[in-house]
Amino acid sequence: MSAENSTVTVRLVRSFEHRNFRPLVYHGVNLDQTVKQFITFVRKDVPSRTGLPPPFKNYKYDTMKIIHQAHKSKTGELVVSLEDDDKLILKEDSTLKAAGVANETELAFFCEEDYRNYKANPVSAW
Image (cartoon, one colour):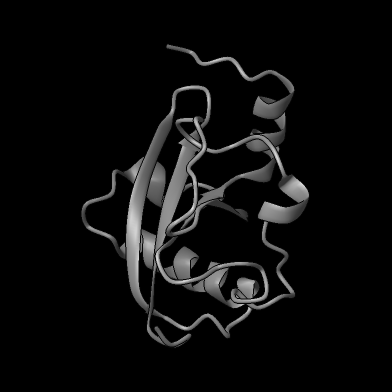
């Protein structure tokens, strides 16, 4: 599949402790765009989604991390894996393709501060 016609699932993570997330599927994603451009696109798109509750629309998402790639093994974590941050957290200045995003990749989109707090104390609230 070409880099201009890829499907990417973005998991909006509202709360790690409560495992509160919603997936959004994006078709026709150009993998040659930068991570920063894709983050800007998703940030603009999220408030216009009719099926999302307001807490998801108004949240301060700032970081993307690869959760799963097609035809590879999945993590046992229910929200996002806490390992391999240096490889899996996307750098804003690289392209999606260079960061490891391919067709049918699933990404988590979350607030980095919340992630760091959860990683320091990974306890679920329920």
